[in-house]
Image (cartoon, rainbow, N blue to C red; front, side, top):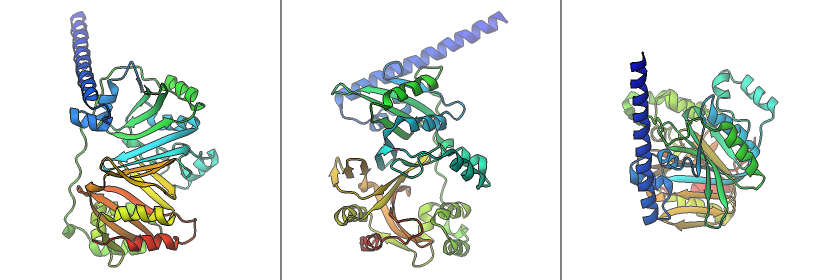
Length: 381
C-alpha cells in the first residue's frame, strides 16, 4: 500500500513539474513575442504561439491573473455578482467581429425572473441561462452558459499607472467567450471581493482543455424538406422563432437563406456592410447590432456616429460603443424578412454568422421607415 502511494505521489510531482515547465516555456515565448510586437493582441499572440488564449492568459497566474472557480455554475454566478460592479465595458466577439459597450447592466426583479421561468415549460434549462439581469439596457446579453468554462480575474497595470481590472470567460477549449472591464472606482472593491469569494483552490497555469468541436457538415439541400421549411418560415409569428425552425430542419443559417421562400431574402454584396454603417451614421438611423459566439450574443441598440477604417478593419468608434469588423473576411450578406421584421445579416468565408443588424423599434410598432429605406438601398450581389 505504501509503495503504491509513493508511486502515485511521484507521478503527481512529475505531472506538476511538466505542467510548470510548459507554462514557463510558454511565458518565455510570450514575453519574447511581446518584446518584438509590443502592441500584439493576446488573441493574435495565442494564434501565433499555437495555444489557446486561455492558456496564454493563465501564464499570468500569480502576478496579474487569478483563476476563479467554475464549480457550481461558477461563470453564471460570477456574472450575477458582476451586476454589482456598476459601470463596465462588456466585450464579446467571434473571429471576425468585436462588440464593446460601456454602461451599467439592468437587473431583473426577483418576481420577473421567477415569472419568466414559470411561463416556460423548459424551466430548468432556461434558468441556467438567466443571470439576474443583462436583458435590455446598455449591457444587453443573451447567455448560453453551458458553453462557459474557465474564468479569470485580471488586474493589469497600464502605462499611465492605472490598473485595468477585468473578468474574462472562456469555453472548454480555451476560446474567449466574454469579458467585463471595471470602469468605475466604486467597482474596484466589488471586484476584489468577488475575486476573493470565487478564487479557485488551484492557482497554476495547468488547464484541462478539451479539443474544439468540429463544425457539423451541412446537409445537402436534397435532404431537406424544403416545402415544409418554407411553410414554417411563412407561419412565423415572431422573429425569435427562426432559430428553432432552422434547428428543427437541420439547416445551417446561411443554408436557410438560400432555401427561403421566394421574395423574403435578398442577397447583398459583402461590401454592403460599409454602406449600412455609413448610411446609419450619416442619416441618424438607430440600429441594433447583434454579435455573438456559441456562448453569448451581445446587442447594441442606438444611433452611431463615427465610422472609420483602422488596422485593416471597419470600425464604429463612439464613446460608449465600439464595433470592429473584419469586412475583408465577409463572403455574403442578406436582407431578410421574417414575421414582418427586416434584418441584415453578414457571413464569413466559412459560412459563419458574423453580425446581424435590425432597426430599433418600439414594442408593438412597425420598424421605422428610415431603417427599411436603408436596408433597401444596400448594394445587391
